[in-house]
Image (cartoon, rainbow, N blue to C red; front, side):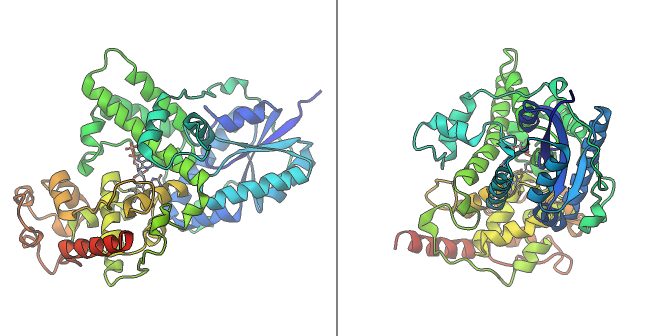
Length: 475
Ligand SMILES: Cc1cc2nc3c(=O)[nH]c(=O)nc-3n(C[C@H](O)[C@H](O)[C@H](O)COP(=O)(O)OP(=O)(O)OC[C@H]3O[C@@H](n4cnc5c(N)ncnc54)[C@H](O)[C@@H]3O)c2cc1C
């Protein structure tokens, strides 16, 4: 008798390896794979042309892997609940599994889908695949009210000790090739993207991970904050679309950490890298337990703190023309590649939130138009963290001095000159400056007509923000 099908709906988990969702579906029957492009997904893809190209390339790779396994990825466009219920009726499937979303809208959509399928008499399995450690597991380990962690340091200490589940057994997966009619694979052009040539696949993600582990992981501690060095893994887009499992990455790094022959410096670096991965889990669980924080400050004490929606220098910030070279280089790197170096992100976001006093949501929305990464819960967690209204427990917001950061992390201007052509003619030696040089002194190097003067005086703007902040939190 032919095996009963069970539907698996792919979303931000575009691979077959180490896959919690697929493992759950396979335990119920032969897996019938589908991808549903509903309005929510289409709108996130339309927001960023490079994201659309990445997604389409990853779906094409998944479709061809499934074909090799004798199956076929069904593609449907339309509301998820209706599409999946119809497919179940047409194929006799008992139900569907899919991996959980962590942002507020995704959580709502998942719940709606779950209820709709259950009302139709189908089994609905919502599976945690994206994080290394599922939110409930972290919360249970905390042993308190089950509401998850709001502070990162204790979260990481628990995370570090918890075992990582493995679903690395693709041979156990049995796929069914459906006879159901199909639609064309997604194409970047249907999301308004003219981007071509993006190669996003599990294989590309594996290669990136292997190269990182071989060449750069041991120096991650020292190199990850230096924007010119590409010292980080650049795996974020792959992780966010699931072309590689965060568990696979964490396991590889933990194994290497456990190698008795690794040097102390390397172990420090590997721990820091795991800390970065744990930070992603931390923000996912935060959003899972506190979905309202997608739009409102996680820190209740900051409710009502006035944030501007606009500023005379906002367009300059958006365009990478603030007159602060590190900030402008970061924005232009983002525009040209769909990615910005993590440390530079913090400095660029700080300028928006503090020097310009603009709402962190304005920044999050702006970057959503450019980033390849598609991790709304992670975006929110980071923006709130930087803006001092989220999970960061520091007493006062950490306001970065953009020129001091430039001198410290890009002392000879390598990064800045790479992304800002107007500044390329300035020789390396001229960038160093003395620690006590004022920004104005260093900026006299730049030709006024080619590169703008700073749009705000950082010292004045930061002081004004802090005064307002202090008055608000302890009137
Ligand atoms: C203001 C701001 C906005 C951000 N917006 C996003 C976003 O929209 N989507 C997104 O995925 N990341 C976001 N980040 C986090 C981080 O900067 C990016 O994930 C970045 O691409 C990591 O680069 P990498 O892969 O080379 O990191 P690595 O340093 O190699 O770290 C490995 C992995 O750990 C995770 N990680 C590292 N740093 C963080 C962090 N701060 N928070 C959560 N996870 C982390 C990522 O999955 C990353 O791929 C933001 C950070 C800031 C400061």
